[in-house]
Image (cartoon, rainbow, N blue to C red; front, side, top):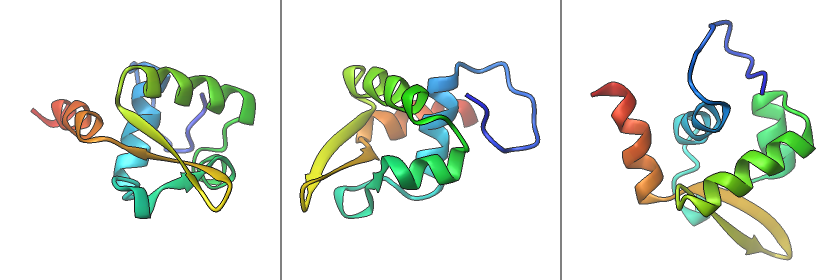
Length: 88
């Protein structure tokens, strides 16, 4: 994943994605983002983004919801805790 941050990170790409979702406020179902919206924030290829979101969902850090027939994603409470470990 090539997040447009201007910094070089040695963190796993999924974790960078999780941090980005948290930082833009996608932390509740009403703040969930579509794949297209996340692509705009991350400048990632859709296929790579889908793989990372699948893994984060399987880990329980991200939740997929259907809103008006559209898949949307947001960080779960477990995901928020995981992000906050970066700062502790």
